[in-house]
Image 1 (cartoon, rainbow, N blue to C red):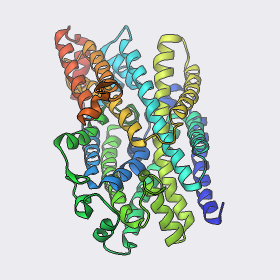
Image 2 (tube, rainbow, N blue to C red; image 1 turned 90 degrees about the horizontal axis):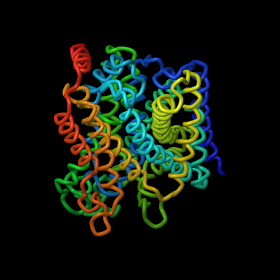
Image 3 (cartoon, rainbow, N blue to C red; image 1 turned 90 degrees about the vertical axis):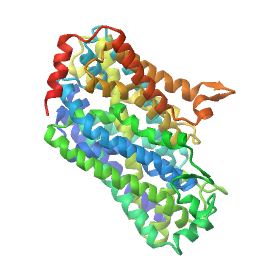
Image 4 (tube, rainbow, N blue to C red; image 1 turned 120 degrees about the vertical axis):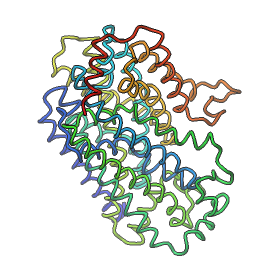
Length: 512
């Protein structure tokens, strides 16, 4: 290992130690399950905003999105546009009302518990179904984060992918296990800040170091259709985008309403006033980070020449940000420690999502399944211990799923995002804004949304192809629409909610 690599490694070690120290500090402050899952509802505006956005974007923001644009051109920005619209909608229309409703509905600590309390589900069908959905899709989601970590260490240090996978999983497991929600949120705040700085600095510096015009360099890089096609957001490679393709990418924004690891941040903010501040911070962060990630894909195509990623034994296109940092700070500017810090931004993106997913899955298993179905007399300390055991088990299972080094980060994220968004998004939205939504409708919505994604993405029904592959339509768009439709149909076809439920709805709706 040469001197430059050792310096970069020292930056990684310093960063990882900081995350573990934060976990240790908050372990002492975590004495109950409410502390572990929601931090006692005590988040301030900055921590809530950056934690929500950092846990949302994951390694996809710094690897998946730039890689897609590097490979195919700016036509891939429609996913970013959809996600930005979804973020704004989530903060403006979901966050405040969800926070109020979860407090009103028996101080619900988790999304499954909110569903149960909101619809007075005495048989606990909603709790069981929603917890199972979380465990299934968050396993895949966590695996995508671990896979991104393995690829990062493999690319930067040349460490075997499987060893790298184990290192990343071990550190995330350690501080999530120890500190719970507050440790996750505080580390996410640090990680969100680091991500944003790296996203802004790297492409700007690289742009000013280009050896020629961007257009000429893009033509030299062998882009399909040349620079004009590459920079045209309405072009997919060498052909125009179809309506279905743009609609499918924009549909990613629908997923926000159903992401438990994001929704719990809204539930944990200490006041409505802080929540309004958080929304402004989060939206600005989102504009800057998504725009910069797209810029990285474009600039990277020109800056990395003569290397063309994905060809002739070069790293995959999803490594464009990593390769830019390596070239920029270890070759052109000879600042390896700074480069190491920016590379930690990628690790931050990965860890900030994985830790949140582990925590939500732990809450679903310990609070919603164990406490309610296995040991109803369990005290807070027992639930806390079960949560920590769950974090270990889920980490191991996600590690197994991510074992294949050829697994696509984008593919894993896409499937998990669709499953959670379709199952929970319409139910959360209509539970907050449609008084007539009832228990039967909520069950039908969650089941139909989740099953639609599984059938659409995993079962070959058309000539050996899945419906997703055959139609080109993103499963989230189909699952979300079908779930919303089932909620309306089943709610109207069955008994209206009781006066107790509608009165509670009116109290929440009347508060501002």
